[in-house]
Image (cartoon, rainbow, N blue to C red):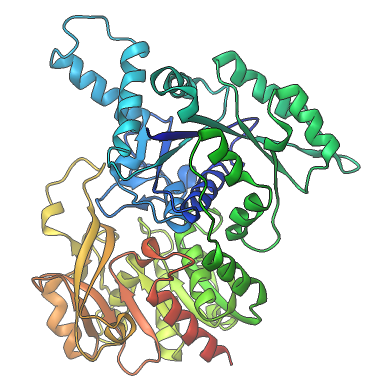
Length: 534
């Protein structure tokens, strides 16, 4: 029988349910269990693809082209669980499917209601993720907090899992807050109320993860246990770590979280192997080299917009036993700066990530010109590669108005243009070039050397590409086309000639980077930046 673990949150959002859920997954995998991760987002959007980064943060893209919540990126970094479209469930998807079935007469004239039709569809989607007979445990994170009106159908569906599969096969983990008030006193009242709300829904948590600034003492844990009806040993201190989020599975293991989970679910106990994970955390803790990487982007003030980029840079630091200091630079500020060199001189390497819209683009162009002419390591991802082409066309080819049709449809030299299959697209949700794609790397190029392979597979999320109309002209002027699609029809990666490290890629290598297996591009980029900073 499959085992189901539901992770819920209380008091307030952004407590770290995703990290908690995937840390448990990490520990169960270390006990040789085959797991799957699921994220439920209660918003009515079908997916995260059309949501503003100001509201939602990063959009994480899966191999099969799903545009999902950034928590799925954490799942991929902490576990080896395959992340697919089925791993992301939203209210929009659920209602869309139920309404489709109603229109097609599947319900035989019955009144369609939240219970049982919506809850049945939620349960069907969760169960589907674990259809593979090799899967042992499915971990489901329910977004939002207990008490949110949007979350009620999901909590009801979770409660019904006990009836459908038996209590011995269902576990509830609740993440809640123990705030610190004046004088350093920790308060349990928010946790008590949060669990009380769960009780009213009919759910008794089996494990409490208490977000707190420091370790809870035995008296505090005993008090929480009495008020919440949770065993004292299952009241866990999810305290703030001082080094890296990748330490959290080790913190949970020290408090026997994985042991409690397998005991309560009746899973045969296997010896845990955390050697690789502990070694990785140890590498981070003892790293002494430091490198400054400038991130020149459009949404720098938002901590989650470039989440996978930031994590992949840290992974690149791990590969070089170096601590990466992120210097976040708003590209619009570089447009207005009299001497942008003063800002850019302070970093050892520069990365321009993806993005949409024309705001701050000229600041990025100034950045790229600086990096190209100064020989400073530069990494352009998606939009960051487009800017490389625009800058090259303007300052090497001499086309002063060279641009992308995304920003300047009237440009006489549109070196970046809309993909042919995007010209007549009017719907924006899920219509970009999305998901895993094959790239052929050309012999003798830097990127071919880095990957050590002629063919690579990385994920895409874009509508615009290098215009083939200018391809030969750019190559004749010295810009190196380092890789293309299988049929050579689209440019996938470019390289500056006679530059120590100047690469642009159309794909998003940050989505395939993990702390145990850093994406090779990030490892190489950090190494080049370290060398530059010496």
